[in-house]
Image (cartoon, rainbow, N blue to C red; front, side):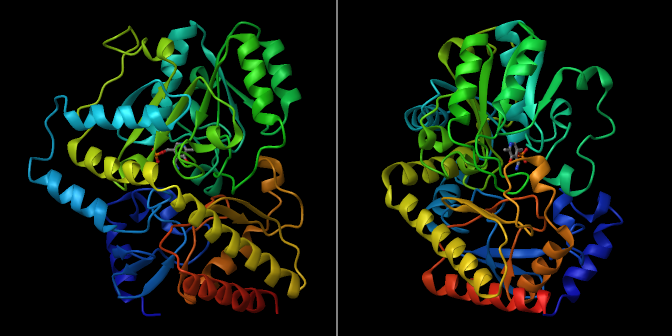
Length: 430
Ligand code: PMP
């Protein structure tokens, strides 16, 4: 693999961009080596500046659910460009996409568009606080809700990968209102609620967390959270920035049959453009300005190009249930294949999967929360990442991320991925 142009760009980038990248995990620090600079992407492939071609297993961290540069989305974007790139005024497309999201996501009766998942979660917490008149909220250890100050406490994803889950720069005053709980532990929530009676505005979580590697909710866990929040008047927020429109067209809430009070969304709604959204019960969303007193705004919110891309994506997913069957099938073929190869080679590493999201952890222990995820041997993961990359398979450059598969992965490509997996495992462990 020739990587001279990526190397040159990375060295140059470090003169002008902190760490040479615009988002930390991209720097490949957790897996060794240097990042590849990507020139373009098509279907199931990424192509770097040196012309190397990789099979995609992250898909822009989730949104490219149908693969890269899908003709339908490209056409919608090009058409929208004809009419201008931003108006800062209401458009018909915003109404159309809002109506569509309301029809697809069970908890969402009204929705507000923003520009990233970070904005969606920051805004949702503010609204929940405004609605309840309470300050504190519960967050799960190892869950990631973007880089808003109050979420950078025991945060997953890049914060966990870089070894600073509690970021400097977050004041003690802010941090004191974020109450932490381990995921999958209802007793811990009961204790927090009892110790902070009447003071908790919201409980936010990734219903199926992907930011400490993929973990699954234990039987009855999400239902249990729903019951506690209803009983205590706490706004239950599902952060479905990754799971929304991916695990099912109505997200994890549809799949598990548990309806939160509010939902945060992102990525997929933009079809790859920078978009996020938050929504929920009418009575709560009516608190958002200008309907209500909780202020939240955005010059580029509901941007016409982003809305065009998102509408193309969501309309397609809404009318093609077979895409979800395919996503599930792709996920099953890959995770079953990996487990069968591991068994043949005498390994028993934990593979967590739901639909088209999965993680393989370099530990035999069950992985179901922040602490159990940390048992994974990240040194081994780094070697595995590099071995796969050299065989043309592009994984997320951190153990503490989920992989996101797309419908563009054909059975033939899946065979190649599995062959690369087998060779990589042999290389690492022999
Ligand atoms: N919430 C979750 C669950 C996420 O996974 C992410 C990002 N991966 C965010 C929020 C933040 O989204 P963004 O990076 O678009 O700000």
